[in-house]
Image 1 (cartoon, rainbow, N blue to C red):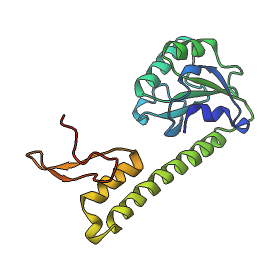
Image 2 (cartoon, helix red, strand yellow):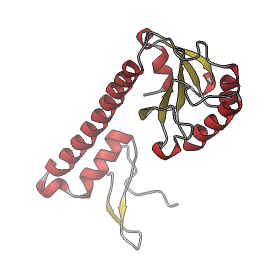
Image 3 (cartoon, rainbow, N blue to C red):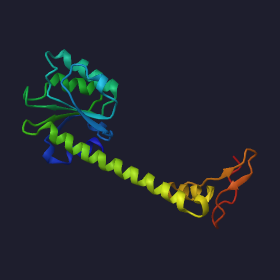
Length: 189
C-alpha cells in the first residue's frame, strides 16, 4: 500500500505534517516503538508508530529521524497522547531527511492503524501470490508437458506485452512469435 492511502481513511486519525512529495512510498509493514534506536528491528518500508517516549530533548528528534531514514522506513506517525502536539523539532528533522510525518490523534490506538495496514498489505501480497500461482498453473497445463518455451513466451506477450524469442548460443531462433503482424525473427541487434 502507499502512504497516501492512509490519509484516505478518516478512522485512522492521521494528519500529514510533512513529506507530501513522498506519499507514493510503499508501506510493507508497521513497527511501533519508543526505543531511542530501533534500527536493529527495521528492514525498510515500515510505517513507524511512536508515542515519543524516546524524546527527552529537542536534539533527540534529529538522531531518531536520521536512524529511521537510514533504515529506509516509509514514514513516521507520532502520537499526540504523550506530548500533545507533535514537537516542531520532529517536524523539522523529518523535513531535512525527507521522511513523511503524520500525527495520530489521541483517541486512535496504534493497534487500529496497525490492523488496517496489515490487512491492506496482506491483501496485496495475497493478490501477488494468486497471480504467481495462476502463471505457474498456465505454464504447467498448456499443452503436452507444459507446452515448452512457446507457453512461456505467450505469457510474456499476454501478461507483460513483451515480444521475446528463445535463441540458441549461435543466435538461431528456437522459439518465438510467428503470428501475422509479429516479426518472425528477432531484431538484428
